[in-house]
Image (cartoon, rainbow, N blue to C red; front, side, top):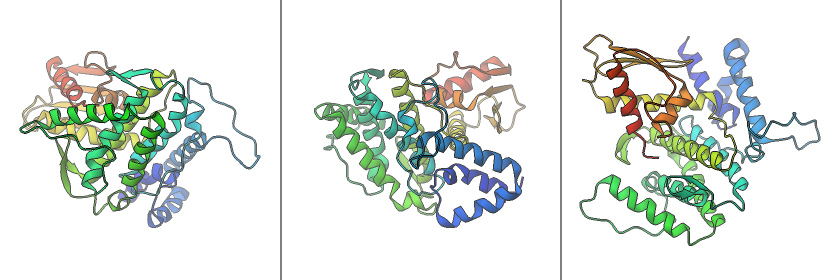
Length: 336
């Protein structure tokens, strides 16, 4: 594959959602005319967007309805995604999907979701979770500040903040909470850092992780998707995973973070994700001790804390301890 091929393929999901800048958008059609595999992927993504957008409004025949177990009615009526750079496209898509799902919660905002949160509290949590990146990018907080506790770790400070935001939002209506979450998300997607890779390149520390700002947008996408799935499950609706290109952006981010967490002395494991790439995690100075293969969605759910290490479906051989170390470290990354 050429660099141009890989570059265009990484743009396809954002292109399908209409979220590319004009210069990038012009590069896609000529490549699709020459590349059969990218053309097929582009068609699949466009079909996904069509399903999310719902029936056509011009009177043309609608596609046959999907079963409720595949895609809810709400997820077929999303807001248009804003035009953003590829690194922010997964977040834009995840925000649109959650915004489309939330009408399904009408009358059921008190449904238990995850931890001790109901649907209302889960949206409030996302309002709090987006806040550090929003604050870094100059967006004013929508909830009164939580008094700082001297010497507190970032984890303790974060737990206090999310609890305070949830308590604050439970004194308001769900509609008010959703409006503030959506407004903050829209403000994030309107920043120069969401629209241009250059200002998103510097590394900053948020939530205990030092990553480029671009990667922090992917972290926000990851969490928005995980909690959209949580809410969907609680409401008895099946939420589709992110489009393939977005999913792979999340997978690559999770692998990078996992590699850092394992460090350079861990027993080396050849890690692969079904249908894609492979990496050696751990020491580069020793022979590979084991091989581990996971489905991309299952891997993300493991990192997101939705699978226990011994429960995630996997293919593995070699040193069981080395495999267990990777799985346990992946699960330990969860803060969602």
